[in-house]
Image (cartoon, rainbow, N blue to C red; front, side, top):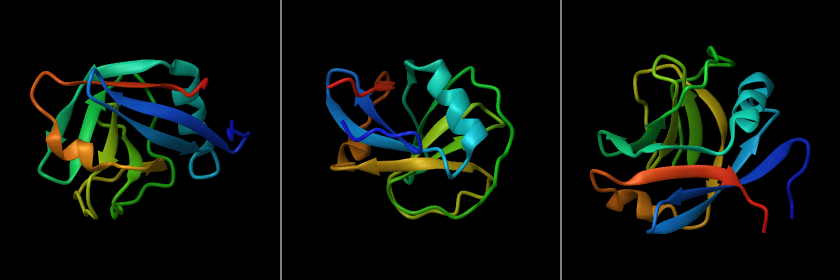
Length: 127
């Protein structure tokens, strides 16, 4: 397993559909990533924000840390105003300040096929 203190390898699962590797990177925002890691596993209904961002809401309470407004395809960010973890399907400037927390790996195109009722699960890769 290639998890380390600075990078945590997680799995983002679209329940009963697909799994995507998700790396949380502590150096990007240590406080937020630490809070998320202590809260795992997380799950929630999958939502889309336009066509560029898939997300799910959590109960995590963490403010903006090194906020930014421009994101690249595959970025993972935390949106404090709704306690949501966001996954960028394509390069995007969402108009909201978010905390960059990591990166998706592998085939993220399955995020384009989200349907109402899909559930995200985010958990540690123990494989």
